[in-house]
Amino acid sequence: MFNFDDRKSATSTENKQRIVIKVGSSLLASSDHLTPRYAFMHGLLRDIAGLQNEGYEVVLTSSGSVALGLNSINASLEEASVQDKQAAAACGQPILMHAYRQVALEYGFDIAQVLVTLDDLEDRKRFLNTKNTIHRLIERGVMPIVNENDTVTVEELRVGDNDRLAAKVAQMIQADYLFILTCVDGVYDRDPAEPGAVLVETINDVSDYMKATSGTSAMGSGGMFTKLQAANMAQNAGCTTLIARGEMESPITALIRGERPHTRCIAQTSPSSSWAIWLTDRLQMAGGLVIRQSAADRLSTSKDGISCQDVVSTYGVFQRADVLHVYDEKGVELARGMSNFSSNETALIAARPNERAEDLLGYKASGRLINANNLVMLEEHHLNWEEPEESRQVSDV
Image (cartoon, rainbow, N blue to C red; front, side):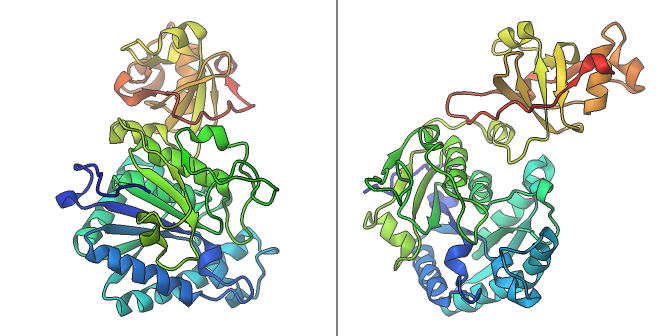
């Protein structure tokens, strides 16, 4: 059991505790008929109403639009194409929100729909605009319900799971706690279907359990693996994550009271700044680069950032202001930082070190690819991304 009154005083307005709740499709849509599970929704929103009356500020991250829209387009989840799922989301999202609002009004509060895309979370300006909207809804007493806009997203440009989306929202609003409701009691030391599987009650380093968690739910797009990724992102922002079974009476209050089994992923005691958190916790790799080993060895103590002349090769097609993953020549990810140039500009400047950047580009610029204040070194609590296989050598330009 833990004490919810042991809070961070600076995270929420008027010292109120702010929580994010993530609910997956398997809890919201019946597997047989793909219709809203009103009994579960009543239990959840009744619980949320009680929490609001106690002073908690609540944001809900909800899946379910695709599952609830499949009947409308006469498609099955197993056979649905990307276009089918986009169409199903367009049909299912109003069904989902109508059900939420109908139930919420019975318990005396209103809800708002906040649909986001990957760019809304990975682009800094759009991230802050989304943050401001959610803050204003909270201030007005309206509970935001956040979901990915599956109608307009394509496979290569989507968040892909609402676990990490919920963690991004938790970072965005500086939540104290993230609750991930699922169909099992929490994280196990192995597949829970195996004999002798033991529930892990407390996790400090999620990487210890990443290999033991795989697979996705029947209707969801994530599994326990993405839940641990989400927990890590929340930890980095000073937010504790609780992973627990959702099909219970008063699912959140029972956790707060310590009445139910769950896994608790402990928050970092000294979280980084919101800027550093946004730079390091990425949902998708926009691009990457390999720097010379000599530059890599001095990177942690350098005040100069990374110059284009330090670059050996680049990954992907990136643009100015994209966040890049930085690797050394041994393939170890060292840092992440915001680029001052596109991938083509970077390769051009790196391949012609004896010429000034502004002469090559036709506008005033230095050869600094990533400024030191836009660069964050990775620490042990960050989850490293593997180096991509295909790279572009700067000598090829």
